[in-house]
Length: 461
Image 1 (tube, helix red, strand yellow):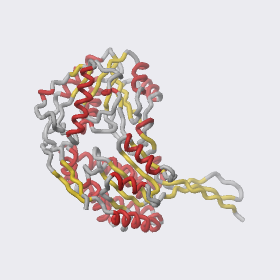
Image 2 (tube, rainbow, N blue to C red; image 1 turned 30 degrees about the vertical axis):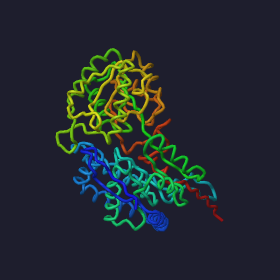
Image 3 (tube, helix red, strand yellow; image 1 turned 120 degrees about the vertical axis):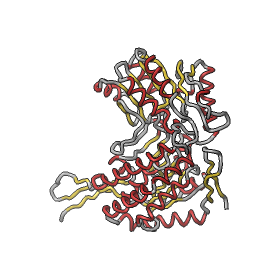
Image 4 (cartoon, helix red, strand yellow; image 1 turned 180 degrees about the horizontal axis):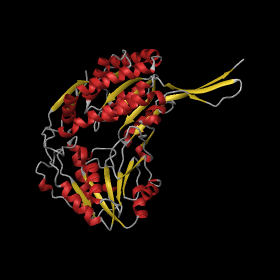
């Protein structure tokens, strides 16, 4: 039986070892999900809500253990991983609360002799493919609303964070979810594609890289099923001349370096009006030098390792190339003794004298590096913000809300923040444009992508 190992970035040891699902186990899971679907979709919504609430309660009660597991599987500091449990709870409960309104029938105006309305009905089995960087937050976006809508769910989690799938299955089982309604499988890449192609899968919810998104589209081509693709970003921030500089810098630096920069909606490029550029850079240097890089299982650590050495090496290469092209590093790596070549531990870095000829300003970094570019006008900042293959989020910092909204209207992204960044409000649609993907999760609109409209046209005789 083929197995896989989860190598922790904390110390390079094997943290988890599991077998991949066998062909018979995959077949049985798909059959069980299909068998459970008719009963689950006819289960009253209030019952589905109650079961999901119980699962969330059980999950949150295990929060201390879950937080520690996240730290060891992917390297986020233990001081921060409890926040993922809280975020899971917030998103899940919000989607549970709004489900009755989001899934309610849509009546049409009266028409003599007719009754007309539209229902939102489930799709069938939803296949969720979740990543390691925010292992619960990315998964909950699709799993809970899919279940609330009456779908059955099959989860394939990253081999870096396999315990997350097991924890969620445990919570739903303890809540009393019927057999087959929620299941997980530890799958190889080849088997993941095969599951996408199975006749019983009616929607794929994928979070990952652009190449991974292309694999999904190729796998389901010709099947006429839907897919939600959240593929990352190169998210920009713009600090205007009238911004509250301390708030802006504090917010952007946290948005750039939290989770060691391993966030699809993290700040990866910063544009600053020339009139406040020096103030912004000085404040940013002070903040970045306050990070404590070290083992993430130590309470005082505020910056952990990247998920693996190869990821850190990629960031090192991108940064070194930019410096050779003229970028100026502002952070002395020797201030972070835990930063070591050939390890996942990497010092944070700020770069100035950057431009869009450098990969560090155009190619997703997914690491603790922020390029800071001087601009002379709103128009220049807007042009540079939009000069990207990605469009997930963008942040504007200004005390002029009206002007901020005018700029936001022209920013090519799924979400525009004003005076904040790097946060998903579950009441808002989470969506990307361009190579950041397609589809939508969270908010009432998120339910639309996990259901289909069914029209009822009755003539009275």
